[in-house]
Image 1 (cartoon, rainbow, N blue to C red):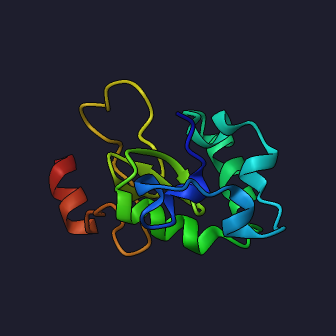
Image 2: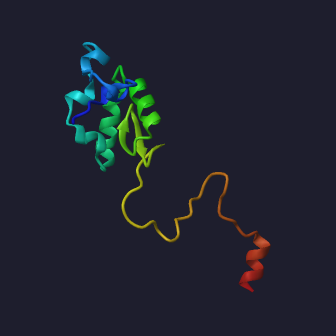
Image 3: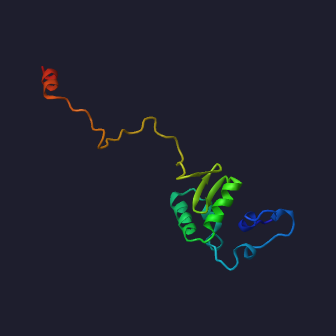
Length: 125
């Protein structure tokens, strides 16, 4: 059985008469129905960004996101947000093992310690 995304947004769709995309969206053209659906489930960060940008112009983005949250979608871009394990995340973690020690960043608030002139003279002697 094929189920359209729009059918998942309508409570009771599985109890009887199936409804079509036009019953939910009217004559609105949805970007996700005009594009290859695999784009919304891609692993590549550039493809994820492309999917999110398509959602940004979609008139159903809010309803799509609400439906995905209610279903705890396990993965993919829904309503302009990325889901991983049923939760919204900013970005997918890249494959591979993280480094054992992350490089230390120097910020404006935290500069490397400088020795005073007295300490330098004491160390030099």
